[in-house]
Image 1: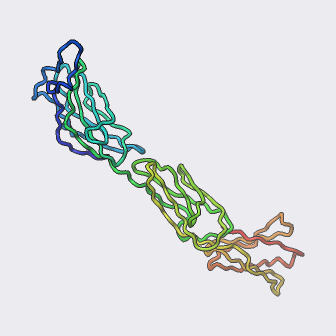
Image 2: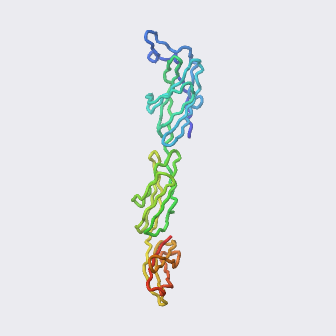
Image 3: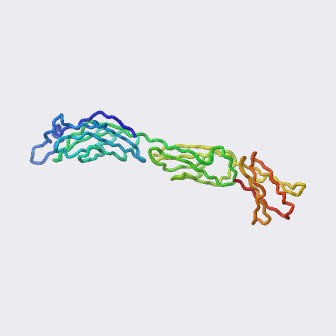
Length: 299
């Protein structure tokens, strides 16, 4: 929200109206609203023509206040405004109120404003001097990747879950898009902003998250994904009858090797942190079985 101090502006007296601005009643001489002397004119801006402007969602809202005219038969005020000087596309009749609120104004736009007074006979004064105010510019949204953190080592094939925090100080987040390199892998239109996808490509990739606000502005956050294939690289029988499996995958991840004799019931042989990207796991009970099946999973 901000305030703009504008110079006091005088709304002309009805007695100052030109003939073309007077109310003409057929058969009766043109009549101007009498009794408003120059020293009785009201001023807009004495109470800050607080173009007090704030932004709500996509549109800006501006509040206006002024000192009223003390004449007894003043019936009300009209506020005219638009984006072209002296060409007003909208009018607000506020009655006897000395405040008004402009809503649904575009952001980052200059508006021109003038005020008139009218009396109980319906006679309206000329426009006041014109004032101008500018609505605040649109603020870009903010976005940050929550998971996976940059540099994360991930085993594939697997589902990757990504989440982001996005916010907009002067509006709403319209959507958040997720990309791996140049490929879109997901989109979310409401918090929590998250998606998941099946990743299979090994190597270093860039996860990009783009937040869009409701005015179309964007912000982007990125993180590095290091993707490894989880696989059994080699196996061998050891002299003591045990069986060795060499597993490769993402460094720092926990690898679990499970064994089965019927592909139905699985028993965990070992759970170990794969510190370097390659780890050896021994099945010491292999000689006790005529056949053995293995599978490797990762956290």
